[in-house]
Length: 568
Image (cartoon, rainbow, N blue to C red; front, side, top):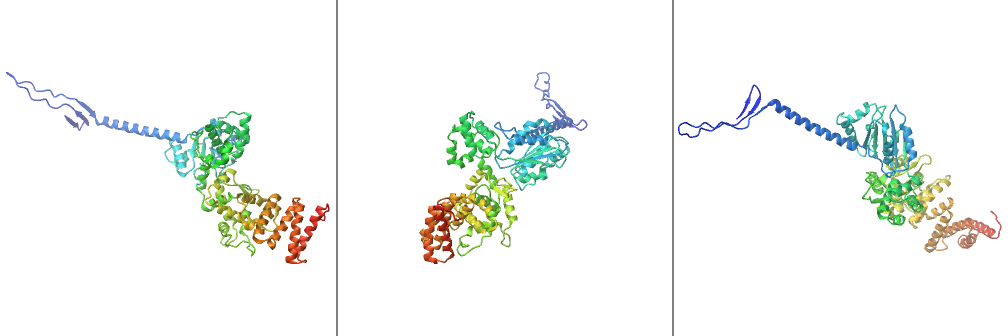
């Protein structure tokens, strides 16, 4: 039986009606019993039960969210391999020891330099000094917002990023917030920094521009050699002996003391037991060794040396990416704006290369020209600033010279799809820069350009043939005499084959080479060349031509030096 009593608002459940009486001889049998379960439930009990179930579900969900937020906001410990960086750690401890105001510290530098590990090491050493510690992955807007939301959930202060910021702003305590991997320059991090006069913030980033938010900051660059050797031996599972330390010192020097590269090398060595052979393997397989992530890792960093830079490179605009790739064909130090601005001012002449021959370098330089066709320093600055924002290139502000980490320099070569084209473009730009430099500003540009021309010539002996004579003269001006002489000899050999030994251009090259021979003490060779030049000039130009008279004076000096006299 099922019934609902309106007054008591109770639910009754009982057995059914009894069956009919059975047959009998004198008297009918009794009816069957109405047996069955009897249940009495009031609606208030039903409501209470439902409420309890709902509350339990909500509590379970809330607990799940809190646990998830705790996991996401958890600040991991530093790698067990961590060593060194004591100067930066001491600076951070001193900076955060002061209380009573908000403190923001930026660790910036190249990907793989160890910025996050320094931050985690500092937090481990000083965790007792902070009321709360929060870790936020700052690589994207979504991860930043999730991180702030997690703070709100953890503190039972709502469940939105705005609530998380509000909690940090209103909680006047010594909390610490780590914004890790704030590498995207398109994100305005100021929107997510609590606007208050309390709390502590550490930012790790490849973008030096974030230093604008900080009272103090550190450029995280290469390790000290002693620390780098220790890191390699620890990651390679090698005992420190005189032999292993010597080998390790050579390896870390080759890796330019970059922490991530050292850890990757150590992982490979620990697996292959190849400390003694690593340098030979690295020389032939640099890209492979710096691209492969070991199966076993000492930390949560998911990228290899090369992949972490590739991620930054992929974010560059085409002009910025093109600029970095072409810089790979220069020396990695001493890259100046003047190299490109002087080239942009190149004046064409009848005896030089044509515009058609210089089409590619002119196209490259056009990215840095204004509407009037003149050099635009602001456009050049915007491009270099973009590359700097990922620490793929750095600027010495005092010297106004750019540099690229040697490993980044080598890696960027591998991103070039047409190396020969880039090499030819840079070779021509260097030649155009030599021709385009102001006559009153000779010595310093010569010193700056020489290392770049040496790299270009080493990469391709025939690079920018039209400008090789100017390369040789620039080497001479810069004091790189052997390189100047060698290049001038190659030019003379080619001109003799193409033009003959009586052509005026060939004679000019002979005269220049004679000057170089004399300058390096090879006076007999200088005399022999000058005799040849004088004979040819007499035939072609006559006795009174200025060029012949100049050669005659130089020949007299050669004779005087060889005879022990000196007239100059």
